[in-house]
Length: 208
Length: 282
Image 1: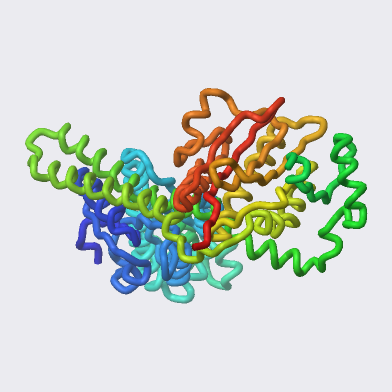
Image 2: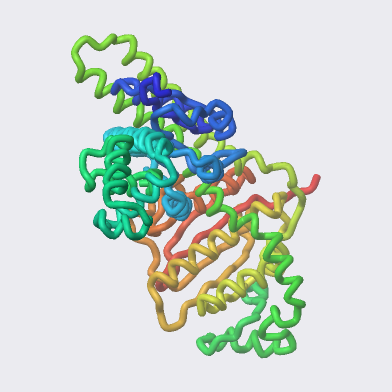
């Protein structure tokens, strides 16, 4: 799935700015891909590709904000760093409200951009690790039988075996067996870990 | 002919601070409505505002230029900072640094080109030259300027010489210069409020076969250190000034074989003037 190194995508309609960003980011060893328009990016974007997006707010055709909306609609989790001109603060505010990772005003200090990119890449890495973890947990939860699922729900509510048995109309011994199967199938080492796993899958990772 | 005979003041705002001489003129012109704007349907005034609004786009143009210049500057900064990083690293290939330096040169050329095009902008609009009366051009702007002045609580008066030679001009460009002068005066008056802020626009013929249009105010005037650079592009004494208004006015004047200039107003305040050669039909 994630075979390639994290890539910094730079989308800017200005060739001079675009090439200078590629040069700058390569000089600090970041894998960089530059694109001249938002639609070009959307065409080539692979959701599984790790990285971040450095995006000019103001572009002819699809603007940076519109691209962000498109990505949001597709449920893309790639962090977006906006680059804005001087008078574009309202746009930057809107971008942040729509879940942008950060924004920078140009011209900017290279270190500021690089720091933000590093943070965005770490953020993306954490998000994707969490997503992969979710997928693993969900896979395991899917192996539970309906009855085991009921037991799981009661366990995470903190019910003792005795009341679970009464509630499900089975013996305490049967509850114990189900309980052991749940722990085995989910791979949880403790009830506390099991609760955390269930809570984790209920909360989707995404915006910052 | 005496100056008072040459000068026929057109009055449309009779403030309480008039000189006696002006009062006499005003009573002679009593039949003219005090507020000309009331006599025109608002839509017409609006239309007039629109027709001259391209002159107000100077601010937008400046914003556009700022955005355009920001691009090569950003690129230059990126390349320079990358070079800094590359040079700090042992074993950097000099050709990499050289490539960035070439790009920096290319981007400075691009920035210079933007500025060149900006300065060429005013020059390039020479298409619509026709014989015109400066008085008529100023009179056309009266409602617009009056609206602006009233909003600022400023009394505006016009003293237009009655027998002026025609000039060969692009009317829009000359009006641009007039509006620019007036706006500068309004801003100067607003920056340092006085009891009776006034702007007057005078036209006259000079001995050198030129027509002069002068806009003077009773504001704070200009600091001596600013005088040498007034018409330089991007020089401004205003906090949020673009520094383009007078520079473009200067370019326009020169394109017409004329000039713009500044002199301190008699008493107090500033006076900016435009000189355009009189048109001599063959």
